[in-house]
Image 1 (cartoon, rainbow, N blue to C red):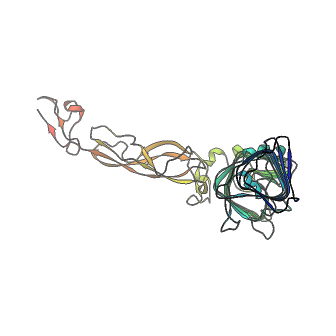
Image 2 (image 1 turned 60 degrees about the vertical axis):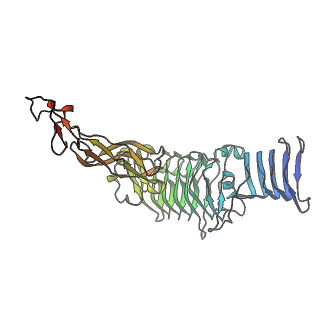
Image 3 (image 1 turned 120 degrees about the horizontal axis):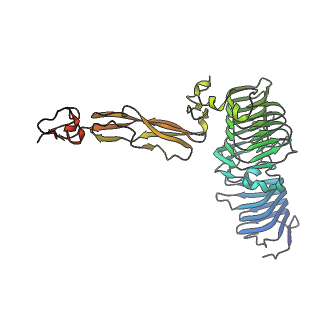
Length: 486
């Protein structure tokens, strides 16, 4: 092991390829790579700082660093079982950073990303035009300590836009921090697309976190130039010190946004809105925003401005929670009004939206899971009393906390007295946006005949008076098979 207090430099002066079975360095040391090719085939390295400015590093062992600072060169980590990688302060300002389990970046074999480090690597040199897929949910809470507190570096910039695609496969990225109040084009993706080159984001959600920038700021995308954004959502807060600030996208230029929503707070100066700060020649469909929105001018609940023939359809915002009564497009309703499906003219509730009247605003089906709630069958023996309630329910899959409400029962079983078969109809449940498309299946209630009832009225009792029969049950042919008279 190299002793403590030493800075080790590996550079182009080392000829050929150096292969180590394990990089064993005291954790208080700094390791610099400025050239050559270094291969670490295994082991585990814990170090104060790892600096990469040139050359290539193939790291097949685990690395834990106080600071990882890459300004050039290439970092490679690829394999079905990735070694662990952890850096308290992760800085990627140059070079190429590659960390994924498999793939070649094509549409047929996308790069498979497993953590926030690989996600940051999408924006590095030579990596911005490939196809990527998330294999799991990603915890981005560590980004609060990156780059000396400025957080994650937005993927793509005006001079180097991201022109590839990311499919989140319905996974989430939680607690992302971007703290760059003097920087334009800020979001998970700073600049998406370019004229003549397609880019796409789909099936991904950003949960919590804080994104701040100057102009063209959005939680997911700062500036969208012709890109396609679908089945995406954000719940974190967005702040712009200047203009074009949106909960999802800051500026949508000729791009398409569909099946999307934003619920976090948004603040800026001009062209500020809950979903998209400014929509120019782009399309927005099947979307909504519910977060609070504040700004000085051109402020909207859903969209700040809509110009250049842009379109906004089948979308809404909450005037109560946003604090905004106007928008450049969309349907405006209060929280209470949104809970009535009849207030949403033209919305496709058969294929795109779900509404639980009296409980929720319209919810997008694309983020929800079908769930069938079946009433369990029940039976009883005739006792002259009216039936109420049910016998519990069964679920097509085990629901989580996103299933809300209390099971209730209806159908012909309610109030049933006589022997026969009746329906048990379940109801009373609803869901939030990340929950369930609920359907119900009836059960049955069977009221069986009482085998017999005994006469207790002696020789003077009235046949039709229940007090003269055991259990207070007056027999009739439909409900009692036999009577016993002593």
